[in-house]
Length: 482
Image (cartoon, rainbow, N blue to C red; front, side, top):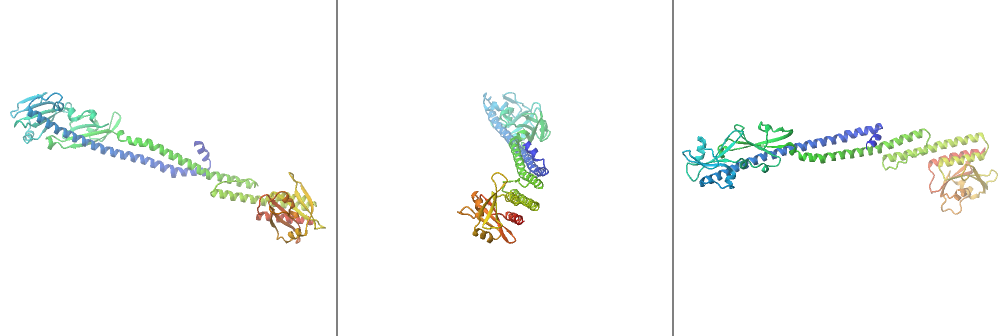
């Protein structure tokens, strides 16, 4: 491809076509590819952020439901007043469990519950049989106590410390590649973080940890009405590469396709441009050849387009010019011979040679009447394999002379179906010609011979062949008369 490109861009036209390709095909395609990748990345990031927002909301609702379940378990266990069995749901949900009466005395059922004075707001909620969640211990050791009204004894309360694994869930239960942080809205106090989130805790939606970029979204879970505690902010974070995984996959597929398309367009451009520049080069070379009098070489552009038509027209022009130059050269040579010599045989030989060159005939002959006896004639023709002129004497019937005299300048004769051709056609017929063009030789209005041009295939003489043959016939008449 590189070698073909180097050969292709050597000419000005090819370089212009290649620049046109770059401007019209390569650049738009490259821009479309870049914009497509950017658009795909943007859409995937937006979809990832929406999913991340939904994930944070789902996790918040899960925490809320677990608190409601823990409240029901605590009320049930406190009403029984017995220590939960190991392995029971209560033992898995609570780190400690106890019952406190109206006087403030507490009885531990499991672990070491925290019996302390309650605020007026909490007492009012308990009186209305609504649960209360208290957060203590700070960021280092957060502790969540769930307090509910004891239904089996009026004025008493059940205090349960929630296990972190039960409330927040185990690490392998979290969604793939997702970290969570839970903090109170009032003080922004983190109660739980599955992984460090320094940027997310500062309110940033895009931050870096350990050299990897993360994106985070938050959801505020309303807790005051349900558990009498400040609202919780649930932050969900995922690596940006996780969001753009589909974009990377798309890029691995899209980039090779775009490169393949660019290579294909480049190859087609080079191929089509070469189809334009190569005929132009050949035309220019043939034009230089015509300028140097080379009329024999042909373009032979075997194409079914405008260049093929141009090449055919150029070949026809070259052929016509070659014939015209050959005809002028032949006429000049014959005129020089007529002026310089009285040798009719040499003039006849020159005429035969130049007729073969000018007309491209397969066989030529020249028949001349005898001066004293028109019933006899001499037919001149070129010998086999050399440039000498041979001569054959024969009789010429009145019908043959009448035929030549009545012919209007020239005639075309088909020899394929002729059994006994005229005497002046005998030589070309013996040579196996299928058609012949007969041009009478006349001097001062009287026929004195004929030029015969034979072809192996049946065809008619062109206007140029007729013109050239007629001019040579006139020179022969002058030579014979002199």
